[in-house]
Image 1 (cartoon, rainbow, N blue to C red):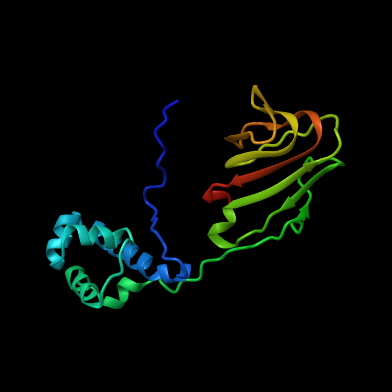
Image 2 (cartoon, rainbow, N blue to C red):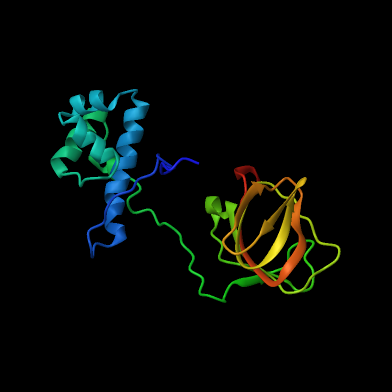
Length: 215
């Protein structure tokens, strides 16, 4: 395996935050970055072309699009003129509420999953609404073996991270021996579930990402 670090999600934004600065202070720069990049792409312009049209440097526009700098009012006005939009439109989305759910340890809501057995406990670790509902996060605790072992199938992708205990977990024709610190990611359409509980109690985190069509 290569020692080179993996760089993922390059469409996102990452920037250093000065100590003491609230995270919401970065929302304005992020909103400007999203709107400027969207308008430039829609206009079919390169970064160099758009920068020239706005009368700013290519480096400055690149920093603006990546929310790496605060945009002055004069620069904002130049960008608005370059894209033939109002300056206020470049701020659109800055005041959008970003939902979040915080769940204290041990306060997750117990749920019953189809196929669950006695001694198999599922706690849902919060749930967002709307487009964010596609993600389901569960803390699964297995304290008793059951026969037969339930197998599950669902749309989307599932990720499992082992916390305590040990088990053999099947997905399709493969069986994986999982111990604390192990992770498994798989297509939820394939039949999956524990086939041997080798060390009880077992705790693992299960995260399911459902496709848009099933939300």
